[in-house]
Amino acid sequence: MSHLTASYRPHPQSTRPLIVSKMLVGTSLLALAALAHDVLALPSAAQSPSAIRIRKSTATNTTGVFGPDSTIWAEDTPYFPVADYVAPPSNCEIDQVNILERHGARYPKKSPTKKIKSALKKLQKVTITETSMQFISNFTYDLGEDDLTPYGALQSYDAGVEAYQRYTSLVEANGLPFVRASSSQRVVDSAGNWTAGFAAASNSVYTPVLSVIISEDGNDTLNDGSCAALSDSDSPGDQEAAWIDIYTVNITDYLNAGAPGAGLDNTDTQYLIELCPFVTVANSERSEWCDLFSSLDAFPGFEYYGDLDKYYGTGWGQGDLGPAQGIGYTNELLARLTNTAVNDSTSTDTTLDSNPATFPLNRTFYADFTHDDLLIAVYSAMGLFPTPALNYSSPDDQETSAWRVSEMTPFAARMVVERMSCSDESGSGDGEYVRVLVNQAVQPMPSCGSDDNDLCALDAFVESQAFARNSGYGIWNECSD
Picture 1 (cartoon, rainbow, N blue to C red):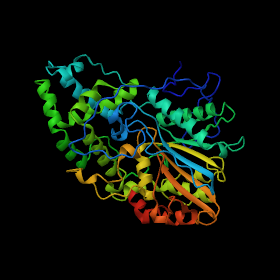
Picture 2 (picture 1 turned 135 degrees about the horizontal axis):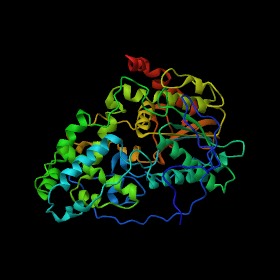
Picture 3 (picture 1 turned 180 degrees about the vertical axis):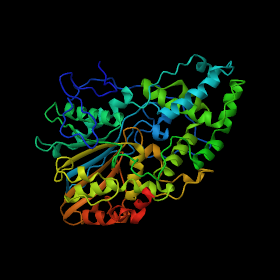
Picture 4 (picture 1 turned 45 degrees about the vertical axis):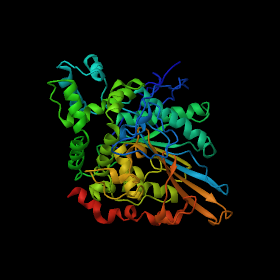
């Protein structure tokens, strides 16, 4: 059996696209050969209900591919469908699809890597006496940094296969998906792996290419770095830090008791817990770190940390500047849905968006590749996942909250916006409609008067996006203040 490699590599005779200051147009990535791969059949650990929060998920894959708790690893969660895909009503026919997808599973970033190694060093310099922790003495940290893992590459490949199979009717030789990516290498590689999966699913009849790479050094609607006033940090904010000191206390005490003299603090514990998802997606098998922290019931608290991190990062907890970073993409989406020029003065690159070669209209299929923080900003700008302010001192009242990052932005998460033409057989009326799905779950859209099928009339959907259409009512101006 052959396996997809983490880095998307073209044939030696082809030209790998180089990231230029503005764009890369029309450079073909040679599709990876169709790959046969083993179905992961991994051990799962028995789980008990959390004393902090009993999970109430509607996910169809409730056990998760890496064990029952692998659906609550916050933004480090491997992709899983939150619901079964539901076809549109029989009187409706999809005529355009827009996919906004996060890159596949990656290794830790640079800053967390340093903190993980620091915490691990404290444990490995002392004698470990606790049986459940014995594996730590012989554990070797050998993870990469920033890049996709092989498992993450496979996630995007599989997403491309799924996209072709689901939306075959929208594809023809002169109507291939138009694909863009933000310029981080893991995002570019994810886009390439997606096109490879798409091509393989069609038996190489249809071979889409990555047409535009948007530099993260300038305006980029597929990255959350265009607002200078919004800090970008991998360190916990005030709310997240406060929650760490609540949920990790007993876990830290257990680790220190099992490794006398280690002197771990609560922040060390937070980064040690991250070893579970990162080692797991690096090796494509459940890590012993997961079994340790599962036995300590760490993951419900860890998940809520992720909820807070994204809510106060680029969600509404940040104030309006977080959602403002999703305005540019939302306005591009509206342009595609209505086949009109982009009307935006926020994070769009006007050179790209005014050029039909780099921002074509009248297409049936678009696929864009991005990061989780940008996905959160787009969700917020569009009014998805409404939630009361998260109470970082206790998640007990969040049982019914829609804000669950593990279901919003897992690795290889995807938001899909389907435009469809409907006849008047269901009472909705003839015309164009829109529905939004996140990880296959159809999203309620009361702001645009959605019907029982969560379909919004296209005109009503456009009107409902007033925050984006009005540049956040002036909020974007604060980005340069």
